[in-house]
Length: 388
Image 1 (tube, rainbow, N blue to C red):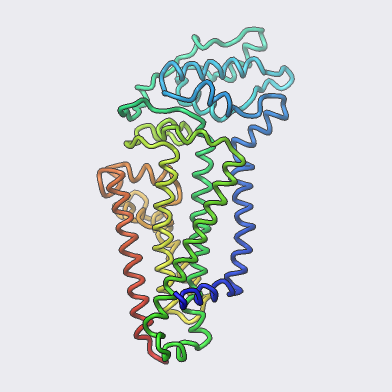
Image 2: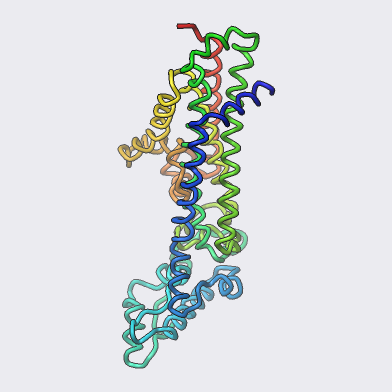
């Protein structure tokens, strides 16, 4: 443990790592700015507020719409949307308020056989009449083939959680790059300074020293993972209403996962995604440590490990539609989009197991065994490292 603490101190004092951490603060700020401040939800809220409308619908959704998803509730929501839009139309611009929650549901359930409802409402306003919900053909829930469970699907304020998933996906890439950079200096920094010749002749140089370096890389990377995601959740909670965590993932009308086979709500999906991310980061850490032990300089280690991290994404784009593409989803770089990975892992024709639980366990097993293999190879390489 003393050696591990020493190695962690070396990482913290490395100027490359310090510079990367400072840079990541600005990147985090940019991701939060784009993902939350300039998100569709917040931009719509600011635009509605400037035009004199209610900025957002958080309280309305919790009070009137949260709960069991039924045909009557869908009709009620669309009716409220029509009334709200028509009652707030302005003659000078002929544009009413814009709310993503209402828009998603209207888009999903107002039949395409209807004329454009927005143009219809504007045209009726010009002649002094209003559109009625009875004039619209509303599709029933059964037509969407929702997956059903012992209790009805739950509706709530899902829009903010869709934005959280997007930002969390961006953060997984940032954390992975930071972990690669941290681990790239662990072994290669000593190699570049010709320190191995001295370190490996000490009492613990070939046994405990490599283990302490491996532990240091893992602990620092896990710490970064935890700190960044805690900051993300704090920022998310400060900028959004988070009551929609109870909403069923099937009732997220932005993601359209109507037939998703598990009765998960948004919070469960979020923690599932975090768990998959964490095991993926550990896989990347182990790979980066192996590369760091094989090359001569931190820069070469970082470039090589980053290339290996990104490679499966390029291969996926090139192999799209081929049988090999399903295996490429096992790699962390291809697990950054929540909707995509949920679709792939829940489709018994697209992945390797017939259930999402089986596919999740398979991905964890693959990443866990890969991590163990890379760490064993790293330890063995450093234990029998030869002077050159």
